[in-house]
Amino acid sequence: MSDINQTVPIQIYTIPTCSDCHFAKRYFNEQQIPFIEYNCEEDMKYAKEVLELTGKQIVPTIVIQDKVFVGFAENLNEISELLP
Image: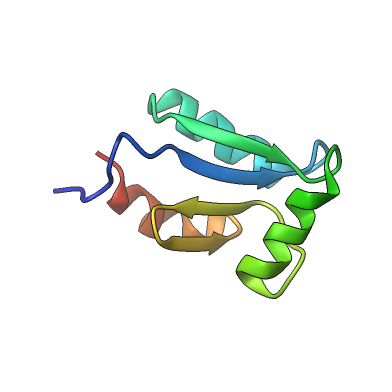
């Protein structure tokens, strides 16, 4: 059973040219999981937030409640276990 709170959307930090970012967004859309996208190219404050969250500047950075994932494909199993 999932412990994800559906009232708190997933946060995804992305850039437009990132294929893993596109894969993550497509996956969440297909699963009908709401998310908020933060484009790090459009607003540098989001790039700063990624650095504060991870100590790195890597996208996608995905925040699900209090869990932070750097990258999507390599974290897919753990992410999918959190989803309803």
